[in-house]
Length: 237
Ligand SMILES: O=C(CO)[C@@H](O)[C@H](O)COP(=O)(O)O
Image (tube, rainbow, N blue to C red; front, side, top):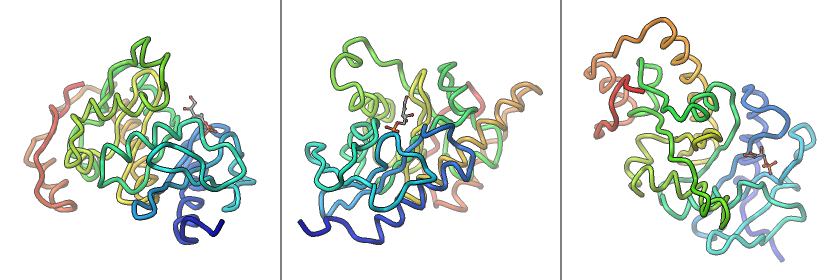
């Protein structure tokens, strides 16, 4: 079978995966990045359990958006593959997805608290708190757990693609952050920002929170992304 995805997409997905340890976002192999080719109806994702220091383009796995079948690749795709697939199918603007277990974002996920907007660093990327999902139900865990891990994010955002563009990430309760973007590279960059603002928020909350003025937050988001509807309650956790 000929190659199902471009060399460019493979290279971009590999590079984004290798930036997970470079950015200090993962312990062991606790993170994965994918990129989608919607015209081909597939996405490329990191194989499960493969260490970043041996990861190569030849290890990446190509998966069908429609039903999750492996269409190319010899290794088992990431355990989070169905979560990625669930998000790609719900939000058409998403071109890439990153999942990590980065320490400070996971702390908020484990506390079931959103990452509040406490400053312009956050507002530059996320037009609202990085929200946290409800915990998966026993049934959601028993059936299609990984797909449902994506569905709780979809439910959290109301399936709203516009909101997914303005707040390109969410915390899965008791688990960790998923971020996304126009491509794999942007999704990784959003994962870096998510972890950075989670750490900043944790320190700010310890010092005593001062809710930033809305006009300041709006100015920072809109100067980079254009006008948008502001979601969420600034500073409320
Ligand atoms: O969320 C999890 C585990 O809770 C995963 O992200 C693993 O930490 C990485 O799994 P693979 O991508 O190696 O299958």
